[in-house]
Length: 159
Image (cartoon, rainbow, N blue to C red):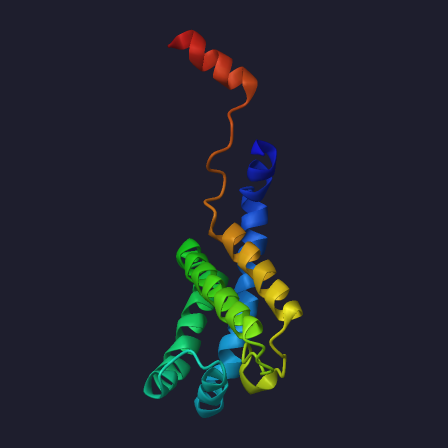
């Protein structure tokens, strides 16, 4: 387990994860910002929010996604952006699972009107994969790595 965690916390792995999830969220945000009314309708079909709140979410969510994406891609507090994307992906997993459990045959709205992806098992698995990617992007690079054996022996001898 430690070796896997060390690999996932490798600065290059974290950087690649941050760039990928940043690009996904950038595409998702831009697809929704251009037509908030259509996105509000897609939110409505999930039947999870009161009507007035659907419009608020349709206006605010894409901008939150955009800020998180730009944070990741511009390297301005990228870990914070990654934590936001991981939280949003966790929410999206729950929302898609709820729609799937209720047998809804609707478009996911993930990329606004530019994507006609349907809610289903494939979308749920895709979102779980993106949640994993965002979680890796949220890791603090290099933290938790075990010291080299020689370094730990030297540290014990000097203590």
